[in-house]
Image 1: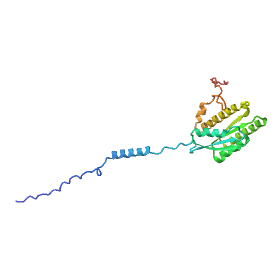
Image 2 (image 1 turned 120 degrees about the vertical axis):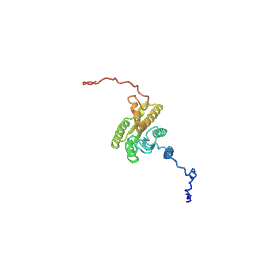
Image 3 (image 1 turned 135 degrees about the vertical axis):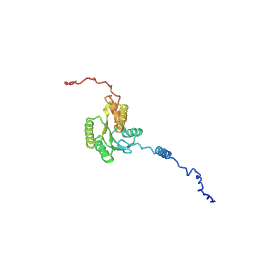
Image 4 (image 1 turned 180 degrees about the vertical axis):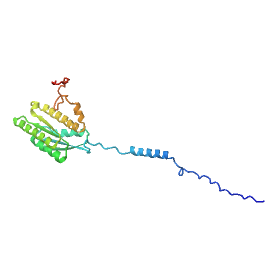
Length: 223
């Protein structure tokens, strides 16, 4: 009788011990982990620095005042600009009188790249002082046109106060503060000027009374 051969089967391989290092993680969970990690990185990104409307870190604002003025208008304007905490770089120049303001303002625009300039001057009581003021204003207008840059002309006439020095100081301070704020609004918030259009705003005193214009329809013949 033939003996049956014993077939030796392959030994059963026991599954390896799955440790935490060898465990396979489904793809979906891997993606979720990557997304969560990316979100954490984005959350830790440094904040963007505040920039000016032109994209620069700071906007150059020029301030030009005169030695003839009876009050330190330049220091007051500079204090208002700094107190606003706007990203501004202030460049100040002082000239002898108001007729020297136009070229000083133009040099700040051309050489210092100022995007707006505030000129501060006081006009005396004599007729010759009025003539000098007229020439100075014309020069400032030309400087604006040649550089295509706004120059806020802040003039205080000595005879506005009628001999009252305290009143003259109050007019001077009010006009300087309000025009310095106007310069900031022109640079950073021009829409605020539109909201104040036609409201009787006055620099150097109380505002004028506001009234509403009549709303009439236009026809072919006009109003």
